[in-house]
Amino acid sequence: MTHENEWPLWEVFIRGQHGMSHRHVGSLHAADAEHAIRNARDVYTRRNEGVSIWVVEAKEITASNPSDKGPLFDPARDKVYRHPTFYDIPKEVGKM
Image (cartoon, rainbow, N blue to C red; front, side, top):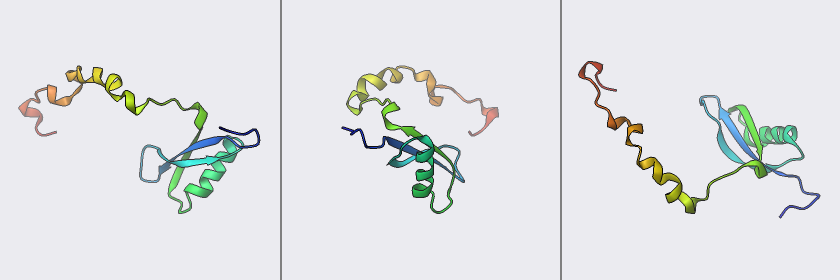
């Protein structure tokens, strides 16, 4: 439960110098998005390893429940055509 005088919780994602995607590194409280980015920079990129920071207010994130894993992901197992092992690779293509 949040209190009126408590800043909102923000989730922090950092893209490293050698990566192409952002990864979740932690959470922090901040008054607004700009404040959250500055705090995230100070807390999570002390060694200059980040090149980009994303912050998302935690209340805006919608997630599936791990206990719903079966019903949520089972339909994907029926779509074998999505798996590369379904296709035969012609000999002239060689190893992939």
